[in-house]
Length: 527
Image 1 (cartoon, one colour):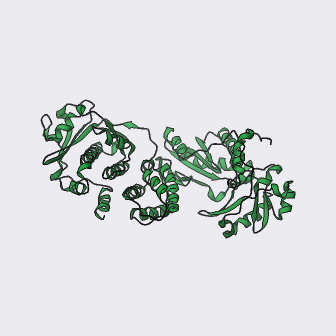
Image 2: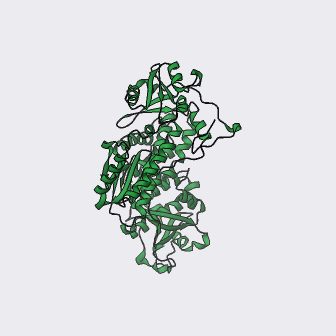
């Protein structure tokens, strides 16, 4: 078998099985749109039919047994029904990949944000344009038609052009799209960046040149004969890219409301502890992986949901960790836009915390300072008698004695973060706050933002929620106990050398503004 340009023949011992035939998915029978689409495309010579099986074989110049009838499906999207030819289930895609040594790449959300991040001027606008039936504009050699035969209502249709669901479609359309992108840069300097994802073009331009750039790109594509979906053209600082809403002036991203109307109820069901099937969790995980591209804080907390999915064999209620995750996600998503890509900068602020417990007393202490090597009298500090602090009692009530000290040390890190972030103010958005602890396990869990055990799991999720809402990020690291003497001194209520004027009360006159911890504690109270 010969290889097409850009392809290479695989060794015979590595060849996948020959392509075969498969029945349609149920959705192909439900949607009349599939047949209507073929009738419209027949006028454009993209498809031939309806045919008998023998007529289809004759058209493809092959035997009936050599026809590969793919599994058709219809997927309901926002404004249309998309017809898909599943060439994977019949083995066609495996054969294409085995004989292809190149793969086209496509930009993602982060490529657009990368452009925003590195452009000196943020006075930008976006123009989006969509190519109508992009894959269907690429002709396929007649000898390959046999691998793209569809069957609708006992009649056969032969695809003559690139087909959605066949691996080679994007390979060849992607090359043409790349040529169009490169030519766009040559015809006008108005385009700072031009990105194309499958059939969606996105041009980044200065706002003052936005209308000129949009007109130039549309005229250029039209002159080349590239068919445009005119109703999908959009120009503005706020635009839609790969399903996300993007504000190019701020570099911010959020989810469209129609996506939120699907996610909110799904997460609310999870949070309330309702019964779920494995199929429901798999579907939700797919959506959350997409969400994590816009809200990267989500990624590190998905592990419990993956673990539950693997164990789920029948309808079951979620455990605490999964419910905590749902609460965290709802808190983050309801906040609004996120700026997922920024240049990291460390703050001129350093601190450390510790916790201690002995007969009759339990304490947390910590300090922070804008100086790397401050004198003890210069630091801001706190020392808290845990047993005498009203707001800390619900956490203690649901924490076993065995896990209490580790939880208190992590609570100390959280309090230190809140106080330090408060002292920084809004001017230090996206700052990374270096904090230290002598609990190596907590430092490791905090770096991953992940823990399987109560109450550390709840405290870390609260930390993530606080980070997202405040725009300041805790950079927790481990230090040896011998290097954490000041924080240890404060846990013993020894204030020698510390300035009384720089003390921050975290016991009686201060109540933390928790984002989700109170709700997580209520889950434990209900059990």
